[in-house]
Every structure is written in structure tokens, then in C-alpha cells.
Amino acid sequence: MDRIRIIGGRPLHGQIAVSGSKNAALPLMTAALLTDETVKLSNLPHLADIATLANVLSHHGVELHMNGETGDGGAGRVLELRAGRIENARASYDLVRKMRASVLVLGPLLARQGHAEVSLPGGCAIGTRPVDLHLRGLEALGARIDLADGYIKASAPGGLKGGEVVFPTVSVGATENLLMAATLAEGETRLVNAAREPEVSDLAECLVAMGADIHGIGGDTLTIRGVGRLHGTDYAVIPDRIETGTYAMAAAITDGEIELLGARSAHLRAALAKLDEAGVKVVESNRGLTVSRKNGPLTGTDVETDPYPGFPTDLQAQFTALMTTARGESRICETIFENRFMHIPELHRMGASIAIDGRTAVVRGQSALRGAPVMASDLRASASLVIAGLAAEGETVVNRVYHLDRGYERLEEKLCGCGAGIERIRGD
Ligand SMILES: CC(=O)N[C@H]1[C@@H](OP(=O)(O)OP(=O)(O)OC[C@H]2O[C@@H](n3ccc(=O)[nH]c3=O)[C@H](O)[C@@H]2O)O[C@H](CO)[C@@H](O)[C@@H]1O
Ligand SMILES: C=C(OP(=O)(O)O)C(=O)O
Image (cartoon, rainbow, N blue to C red; front, side, top):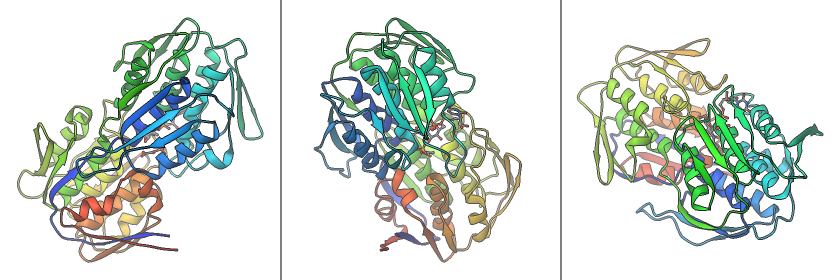
């Protein structure tokens, strides 16, 4: 298994091209199931999760062609997907267990084929992550759902019918599944208390480009009038706001300066406000964002994760790492996932002082971090360990790097380009 070795203590200086967003690209890929024409996605990141979903889609009969190469200019890859015919509406446990987002094939398959059978994705390190909201929503559109043998068996022989879905909790994935299903349902669907994440809006914009009739994009109520068919389109994936935030924090913790090419501040307002409060300067230009410290040490800053436009849970672990070196105490409250503090025991190994009080991590700052061998438990926990390692004195070795490869494209190369002492040690 690969590991990442970091020699910390070097301020990072340079430029990093922000990749296309993983969490936008995944639903966009599943949207290709809704049409028999070609959907061409550009600025696609080169990531393990993209390859996993491509494999799932190819089992459904989608033809995939990867044309572009990832370049330093951030052009990203171009993927053509054509679901001329759905050969198989079953997503097996072996395919789905590798990545929860595979459940996003459910809505499109049901809408296009009238039936689908998808393995229940199960829990993961950050929480139990049920899919009840996806299933209840599809039932409100007339689907019949049975759970048997670990599979979601969904059918709508007469086709899906528009309806009102009021989400009791904001769910990105459930909003995306329902949005896709509703595009081909008969009549009007209203999704109330829908997720407003930029990745949801990106999906909605792409669906509109495919011929869908969607109103309220960017708001918490989406109205979809079903259409008879969707057609192909060319669509560019938005830049990854979580990758942007992660490298912004790497610049801040090392007291360096990084220009994040292609980054969009509009998608990161809450996180940038917190960085500002902590003493991080972010300057916007037409090329992206340049991040450095304002002057002197960082200041302890409290954060609470919330659905968009709040502070993203996907940046909580990285912000916690950043706050270990700040002056004063920070209270980091995680409200989205019940078990997203797996990075904390590992940060302790590096000398951080953090106490967990229920959903809140209380970080006592100004730790002199020291390198240590640490274990990555999930994607963003891994990123937080890399950030801490970049600031720590001596050598940090991050084990189980496959988590990082799910969501960070060429991480070592990007950080190396800014002067970081970081390398991948290839395993068996
Ligand atoms: C591929 C992708 O885009 N992943 C993102 C997506 O995950 P994902 O779409 O899985 O996250 P959700 O927004 O659905 O989850 C939010 C909360 O709702 C709960 N819930 C969700 C669905 C459901 O049917 N029942 C239920 O109770 C979850 O357990 C969680 O506590 O949004 C999360 C929240 O911003 C991010 O951390 C993930 O990076
Ligand atoms: C939790 C994440 O992804 P997923 O929903 O695919 O597990 C993430 O991107 O931080």
C-alpha cells in the first residue's frame, strides 16, 4: 500500500491549478444515464472515485471514452459518456461498496428504465450515512421500493409521476438523485428544503443543458417539469472548492503564499470568512485566489459545519489541523456527520492538543507539531494529516493513502511544485 512521506517546516510558495470538482463530476457522470445521446464532460479530475464510477456505469452499458489529459493549466480530462441502451439496471455490492456516490445511479436508472436494483451503500468511517431520504423521495414520485438481500429494488412500471418531496434534513445526494429522477417524470415535481451546494447547482445546470425544465437553481426549492426525453450536451465541471480550501490551509499553516489558479471564491464564502477571521489573507484576481497569512501567527477561530452556504464539513478536518498551530482556543463543531473526528487521535500523535466534547472538538492552539507515522481513515482526515505534516518538525508518514487518491489529484506533485518536502512511497 502506498504511503506519503512529508518533511515538514517548509513555507509553501508557488501556484497550484485547481482540478475539477469530484463531488460535481460524480453526479454529472450518472446524469448521462438519462439520455441515449453523448454527454461530454470536460475539466474532469483524474481520481480513483471517477474510475470507480466509470466502472459502475460501464456495467450498465454506458460507453465511455477518455480524450483529454490532465495538464498543468487545469484543463482536465474530457470524458464522453453514451448510454445508447441500458443493458443492465443492477449495481452490485462489489461495485457500490467502493464508493457511496454510486447510489446516484438509482434515480436516473429508475427514470429511464422504470426499474433499478442497487446495492445498499452501507456506512463508512465518517458516519452511518443512510439513504432513507433518497428512497422516500422516489416513493413520493410513485416508485415502489423494496429492500431485500442488501439491495434497493425500485420499480415504476408506469413511469415516475411528479410530486412534492419535503426533505426533513438537507441531503446533497438525495437532492441530486431526486433532481435527476424528476427530469423524466410525468408532470411537476417540487423539491423542498433541497441542498444548495454548488455541486447540486452544477448538476441542475447540466440537466438544463440536456433539455430539462428546472426552476429555482441555487435556492432551497427546486421545481422540475418532466420532459419526454433529454439529449446530449458538452459540459465543464466546476473547480473543486474543497481542494481549493485544502491548499489554502496548506499555505496558511506553513506561512507561505500559494496562488490557486482557477479557484472560485463565490463557492467558498463561509470558509474564506473563517480563514479571514483566523488571520489568513485571500486576494482574488481573474486567475484565481492568492492565499497567505496577514501577518504573524494565526488566531484561534470557532467553526460550525453546516449545509451550504455554511462552512463545509468536507473542510472541517483540515481547519482543525490548521487551528492546532493558531494562538488561543478554537471550538470546531461538526453538525453533519456523527463520526467525523477520526483525524484527531492521529493529530494527537503529532503533538496536537485537542479534546472532544460531543460534537465539538476543542483545539488548544500553539502546538509545536512534530512528525509521526499516522493513519488516514477517510478522505478529508487524510488531507488534515498532510496539512499538519507540512507544518510539523521532522518526518510524517501518512499510511493508507488510497483515501487521498479518491479525492486529490496529483497531491504530492502539486505540493512539491510549491516547495513542500513530500513524496509517495510506493507499496506492493
Ligand atoms: C459525493 C458527494 O457529493 N459527497 C458529499 C455529499 O455526501 P452525501 O450526499 O452522502 O451527504 P448528505 O448531504 O446526503 O448527508 C447529510 C446528512 O444527511 C444524512 N442523510 C443523508 C441521506 C439520507 O438518505 N438520510 C440521511 O439521514 C447523512 O447521514 C448526513 O448526516 O454531501 C456531504 C455533505 O456536504 C459531503 O460531506 C460529501 O463529500
Ligand atoms: C465524504 C466525501 O465523499 P463521499 O461522499 O464520496 O464519501 C468527501 O468528498 O469528503
